[in-house]
Image 1: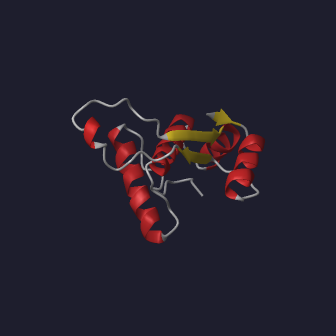
Image 2: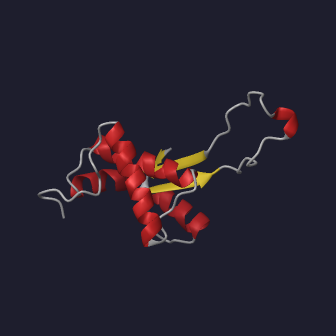
Length: 124
């Protein structure tokens, strides 16, 4: 979902206790069991939604401009970042952040989006 800064601020405050807007939030769906029940093993099962991703359009556009990135690249990066959160990755520790950033850059490279963490000329 794309939303505005005001709406994502409210979500961030109400669900995470952070009283500020942010660029992306992920809300995981209920986790599926690690193993299928014996009766379902070998049978196809309908896909299970991972959850919801909310991206703040205004923040994303402002960041893309400030960081001299194409709007589309930053949108794709935030979507990938949100999906990784839905898969259980986070960036709470330096090690976790490095793991998540490496996955992000690998996924983005596979679809032709440059490393969002690389230092570029003219970028703060």
